[in-house]
Image (tube, rainbow, N blue to C red; front, side):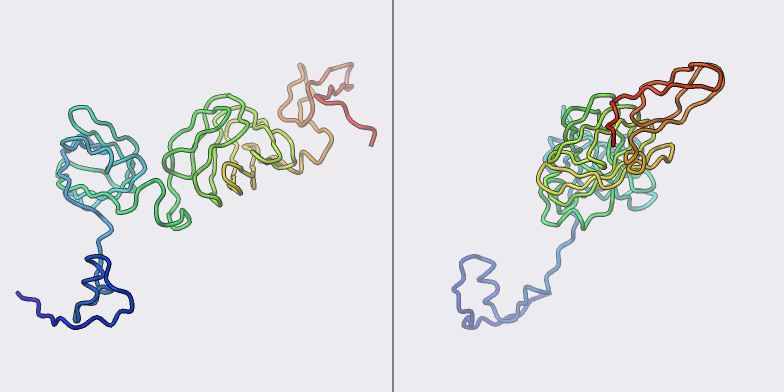
Length: 274
């Protein structure tokens, strides 16, 4: 096959400054019609199991954590997100598959054109991805991938690390009890007060400025509305038989069984007169 073209004087007002500009000046070649596959191929993977494979040499730069990949398997094409990329004598890649699994017929692995960090497209362009568990810390880390993650541990959280892009929306599921500390800038919480989480609580946050997050939604595992609860000075839900047991409360430290049918509520913080 041959490609015929005719060299003609350039009609551009700007002189060519690169090979690409020079090609634009060749009559008959329309660079706007050129398309690029969004997957960069060439890697020859060796199957390990349903979620991992190895590559020869150090491939951790191209196949880095959070990057999207496409693999060819006996069962078909599988799309995945890299969760582990480690090199010793080989590069071992572990992934979370969108659906399906890798199989022994794995023959090709391609990585996405866009990197996981500082991509050329806004995060709004990407579909939500389940992220890894995050261990609670004073400054809660932002994972390499995913906008929905479980938060484990009991360390008090006073701020969130930046996602790198203002406007990012994340959701967090709390596995246990810890304190989210309200801050007028770093971590703005509903009701302007600290929140003590419980296992099963769900929260949604928006990064409104770099490294500054605002809680825009919080749902208790027991479906008790957070804001409605905190507009009260105090409330408590407890049993009235035998030893007093508090099921849930706000600004209540304990309940004292004074006499039959008479209980004394002990507040965590004193109430104002009005």
